[in-house]
Length: 303
Image (cartoon, rainbow, N blue to C red; front, side, top):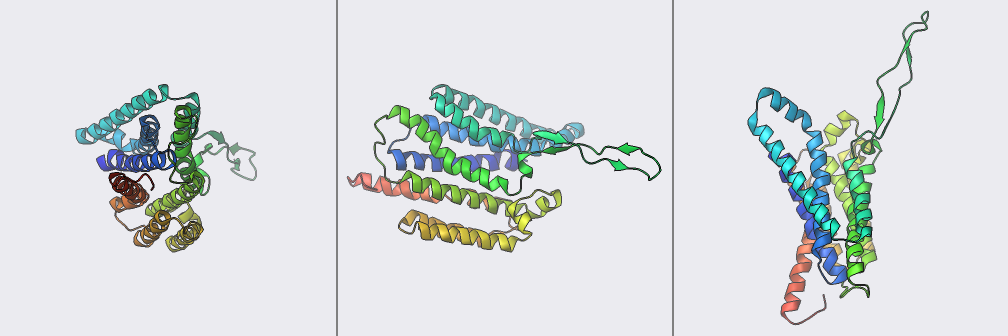
């Protein structure tokens, strides 16, 4: 349970840390701790809260059975979520109002991901032809999770567009005259990142293909009813992205890497292997950092 409640959540948040550092420096030439901390903690809360709720039945059974080890893991998960919320609040207090609004827009869908937003009643069922007695089926709830193919779109928009929006909202106020140094075109970065994160999320759904099909969760692999078709779709999207940005070596090399992951991973792959998918943009951030450090040491400001 530690891996699910804390390990996976922390790993995902660390990928956010890497990519937000990269976005901040590549588009503004500076790194401010506030948007970085906001995005790191908001990401941790969004994923951590979802994982906690998904596994809460296990906590209830563990309490009933007196399994102290499992209960302790859940207690640590709550502590981590609480700590993240406190750090998020501190960073937001020291940020412009626009940052509050953008962060709320990004975080609310994650917190309400599997929460029924409203209910409707199923059609009544007649018990017999003679009797006019009807009974109502239990109410069904509408949740964002049940919108076909919505998860990767939300993840793509939040991570592709939202990360840059949060960073810009803080740095715009700090540097009203514009970026100190810009080595990446923000439009190119946002488009590539949005598409890439959408594909990353879709590939993550391949991992849970069998469970989602049984549960009726309408992910893209379930809608296509095939892991192979999902791979073909992702490969096509990645290839088109690579051709669109063929002048950017970072995007080209990273796209080749992500295409390889698409064909390496499937619904039978060990869960921990999917961390490579979550961190598929991290090599871009690391490579960018190394190149920048090398050129800085050699007296060049151009990346």
